[in-house]
Picture 1 (cartoon, rainbow, N blue to C red):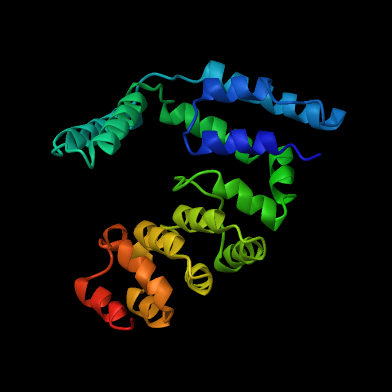
Picture 2 (cartoon, rainbow, N blue to C red):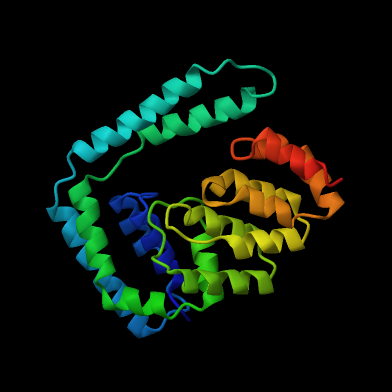
Length: 257
C-alpha cells in the first residue's frame, strides 16, 4: 500500500500549512498497520533526518516571520475597516477570527523550513512515492488544498492529463481546485472552462472565473455559452464574477436570452 499519508504531511509542510514540530508529530503518528516493513524503515529514517535538522537549526524569529506577521496584521486592519451589516457580518467575523488565529500561530524560520524541505525533496523514498501516484491520485492530492503556495510542478501536458481524469470521474470540485492552485503558473484552463459549459454548471463556472479570472479570456468564454438556462444561472451569480466581467460583456451575454 502506498504511503500517501506521508506525502500529504510533507505537502502541508512544504506549503507552510503546518510547522516542523507538527510535521514530526504527524510523522510519528502515521498509520503503519498497512505499510510494509520496508516502508516503515524508510519512513522512520526520513523522520530521524527531519528531527536532526529541526533540533540543530535555529527557529528564532527572522525576516520571513516578521514580514509574514506584518502581512497578516495589515489584512486584519483592512477587514476591521469594512463597515459591518447583516449581509456581511458573519463572513467578516469568521475571516477576522481566522486571520487572528493565523497571526498567533507559530511560524518556522526560513532557514529551518528550507533545510527540512530540501531534505524531504532530495529523499529517494519520498520521490518514489510521489512518482508512483496515478493521475487520479495526483489530482486528489493537489485538490486537498486551494491556492497552495507551492503546488507540484506541472507542465501543460501533465496538467491536461489531470483534467482529463477529473472529467472522466466528473470531479468538478477537484477541477476547480486544480485550476485555483495553478493560477500563477501560466497554465491554460480552457479544457476546464469548456467542461463546465458543457455540463451547464453555472456554479463552478462562476467560481472558476472568480478564482482565476485574470487567466481567462472572458469574451471567448461568453461567446461559447449559448444555453439559456446557463445564462440565467450566471445572471444570478453576477456579483461573484463582477471583478473580472464588465457590464458590457455581461449585457452582451444576456442579449442571447
